[in-house]
Structure formats: C-alpha cells, structure tokens
Image (cartoon, rainbow, N blue to C red; front, top):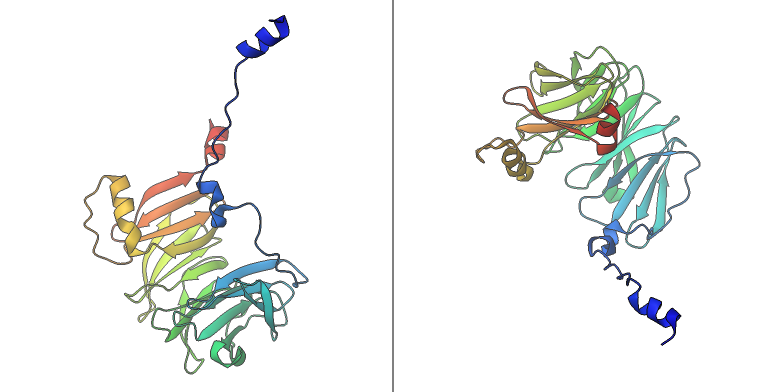
Length: 276
C-alpha cells in the first residue's frame, strides 16, 4: 500500500455536525419570509392585530402602513399625522388602532371601517412617544416628552387624568393591568406605578443608571418561572405583581410591585465580560 493511502486512512475524520432543530424553526430562520418595503423614512414601531394576520408599521415619514404578514401584501396607508409617528397599538378586541406622533397628537383609527380616522386627541404639549389601551378598551393612556402621562376616555376623546411626577421625557407607558394600574418610565431613570382612577403615584422605582426606554407588566403565566428562579414558592396570586424595564445602562430589570424591590438584573454576557 502506498504511503499516501496509509496517511489518508490514519487521518482524523471530521464528523458532519447535525443541524440544530431550533435553527430550522421558521421563526428563527435568518432568511426573511418577506421584505415589506414602502416607507420613505425609518420604521419606528410595529403592531400585530390580536385576531387577524394584519401588521401595522409606523414611520418617521408621518404614515402608518397596514400589511398582511401571511402573504406579505401591502394593504393601505394611513395618513393624517404631520410629523413622525413614534408608536402604534391595537386594542385588545382589534377594533381600534391608536397612534402617537411628534406632532403632539394621538389619532384613533377604526379597524372595522377600513381604518377610517375617528378621533384626534389634543392635549399634550410636546411629542407623544407611546400609547396603550387599558384591557377593557375604555381608556387610552399616553406618554409624552412634556413629562406627563395622560388618560383619555376612548368613547368621547376627553382627557380625564393628567399624571405628573416624572422630571424628564416619559418614554413608555403600559396600561395592561386588570387592577387599574399604569406603569411609566422616563429619561429621568425612574419607573412609576400609578393608580388609574385617583391619578396617585403608588410607587417609584429607582435602580437604573441611564434612560429607561421601556416598561411592561409581566403576564401572570410567567410568574412561576420568576419565582422558581428566585427560589420562592409559586404563591403569586396578583396578576401584575411583576414588571420588567429596559434601560440604556445595558440592563434589564425585573421588579416586584408588592415590595418595590428589584428582584432580578439581566446583563448581556458581552457587557459583563467588558466590566471585568
């Protein structure tokens, strides 16, 4: 046998790696299903319809576009804002779409009537950065650069509460609480828990070291996972006991509303390595 053949037989064999099933999942594919093109400026927000295969996109080009995310087809454009649209959201029933804009207004669109504009809410004195429907759909809550959070009655379009407490631009608000509570976060590095009816500040949360960009109640179905991580018994009965916040200090924090404590801080592995 020739020497070259002997060397080949003794050479290590590189086993072909089995492809991970996770990366074959369509939701984790790095190949996009569709390219949705049409906006003339950066896209600022996306919102999925709660019932149908509709996707709404907001943009700095002052418009909102509606797409069918199953087919990738463009359906219509919603125009009316005169400056960048920063945030959009559907109500829980999928009947209304609300949009927040740098033109200081909030617009409400009727999904069931080809997204016809039905209300324009005036009251903020600066950019409106976020809007959130309450679970019942009776109220709409907004956050603004004017440092306030406002509560609007959807049926009439009237502002029924103005919540004052943040010292800087209010970036996000979440009203998805079944207990009449609202969360807000701000450039002032704080999060505040409010009572919807009284407009009282129930609790202020401090711990982030930079702008807090977003805040969200944790759905009750995830409470068991949080309590398992904390070594607690699964005793949480309050639907909105925990909330999560994200900040430009490169951390994600989980807070316990019942105690006001930060119970978890998540830091990316890359960032934690740089801190060492």
